[in-house]
Length: 424
Ligand code: PMP
Image (tube, rainbow, N blue to C red; front, side, top):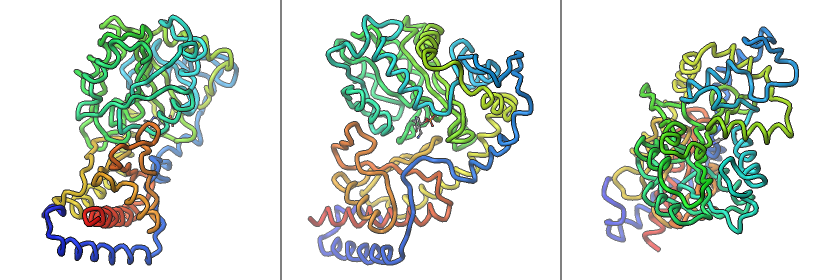
């Protein structure tokens, strides 16, 4: 059947609902225990990096520093060089730190809040109000972090080429309380879009009422391609410099989904001044990062191409799972007018939009059938999905067979919820 459900005569819709209810009851009886909630690498993916466990073979860095000792606040230079090339930066524009880029985002926000940035008139915390533009759907932890700071969130839609730059330019032009924005520029979490060069250029150059407006350019998935087509991220730091706003972007990245999610290396990037500012603030609480881990990563990859080759191995494990999500959604939901979904070319997520008003119900149904989905509204500021439509699917962690089982179950829940909704 590929007629939109909403066009079915009521009697047919009732019988459709009964069929889905029976399928759902079978699911519940089958006692599933599956989880599509978090974008974690699978054990197989982590195994790819087990070479790290016997590294480094030397404790001296290529420039002669004893990695075992204190010092070197910016991280091991050779590792910074490797990732500067991969991220399109100069070495002086990149700092290598601990395991989590999210921690670095919180650090940067904290420094802005307490001290202000290189271009701030005063600390953000001294402003009466601070607001942030948040492309939606987006990454839940970005939003909960802002909520913790008391920073007000202004949602703006994502488009196929990145966030709606016209809407953002209009918002920031004469509102000095808008101090920044989030952006996952490559393979966005959860919607998968890549921010185009044009959109990046606009964001880098748009006039802002706040002199210290910041783009938190969270390039968590810069190298995480799902096909041989390796989309390049826009070079936001150069674009901003050319536009006369050199300190606007602060870039973040990590090897959390390259090596070990819990024991990788995280990076912060930006203008030289931004990096100096970051180190000046960081230096109060750190004499240097874990340089032994930096060396371990340096030896493990060998070169930027080593990182790219390693990512191709992740791709081989991840691509079949994404293909399976796509297959089941297409086969089960295609043509019925009950859902649309992203077809990402990289990253860790598929964003599923079900019939407006039914996402909460779908997630409830799935939970009762033993399939954990990210709570409704998670991808929105204040967990408020105004249309109750979005569900983030994360197929990386489960096995392929588990992805199949979970997605078949999700499809049944989507169909049942849609039929119930139309009959209500
Ligand atoms: N940013 C985005 C967009 C993410 O999806 C994630 C992980 N889910 C992170 C940051 C977290 O990165 P890290 O492990 O480096 O803290």
